[in-house]
Image 1 (cartoon, rainbow, N blue to C red):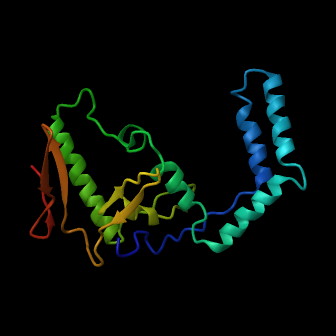
Image 2 (image 1 turned 90 degrees about the vertical axis):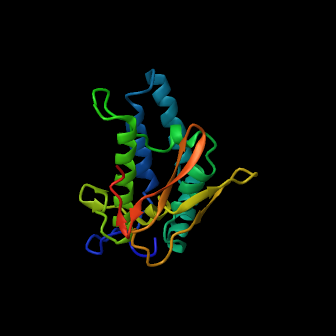
Image 3 (image 1 turned 180 degrees about the vertical axis):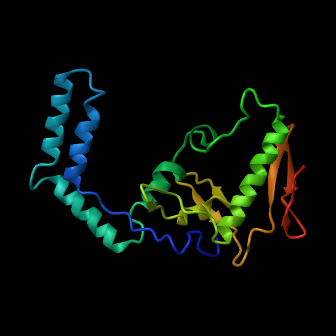
Length: 204
């Protein structure tokens, strides 16, 4: 994005490697309400105990995770992007991207709804580029918003071997006062400018 999108007054902590024994405990707790029988739950307990026994593969994997934590800034980011997005072959619009539609009782037309989404996204893009976007978070802990740079000014390049990659076209120093979107209508693409004389257009 050319600059930080996270407010400097809300620093985020590095994502920790959670203790696997704690993970095993939470896993078994989460299984209780969904197992079909006590036998099925006990079978899961045996598998967890076998995997997590001292000197087993669990200790090796945990050591590798901690080593990756020490060697990278974001130990999960690459796996998250590749496994959840760039190597994900299902329909992006249906299964990945958020979708907004008007309330069934809304009096707004579909075009008005589209304009509202486009303008709202443009304002949010400008806030990101200027470092004024409010930090997202939970329980008082802010999230790192570094990955928000891939929300705008970038594209996904298909790879025939199955793992796509992303290319950014963000310009250093850009404050979000320029840009356009591409709209398809009747199978024809249209380039729609979102700004006018350095200001976000009202799009009406």
